[in-house]
Length: 63
Image 1 (cartoon, rainbow, N blue to C red):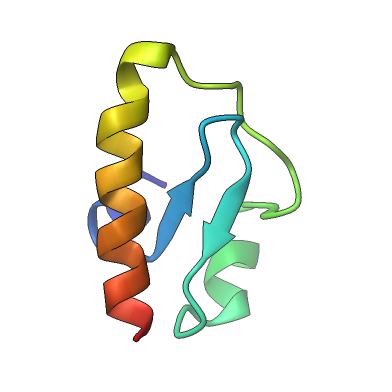
Image 2 (tube, rainbow, N blue to C red):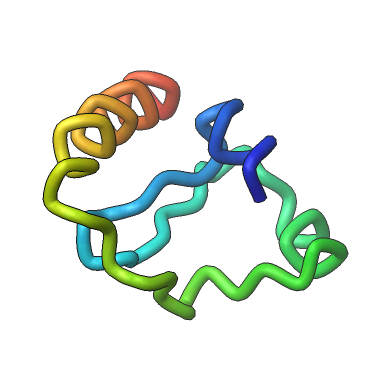
């Protein structure tokens, strides 16, 4: 999952909601047993700035 995050193919909201890049084939998530509808634990407040930046980069990759 770290590699997908690093490549901006997935990102997270502060509450742990996952967003998946449309170019990521669904079988990749299946092979890695990643359920995008499942939330990860909420992130700490001090991580919110980094996550906001990551979501902005993720959005630019979609555009």
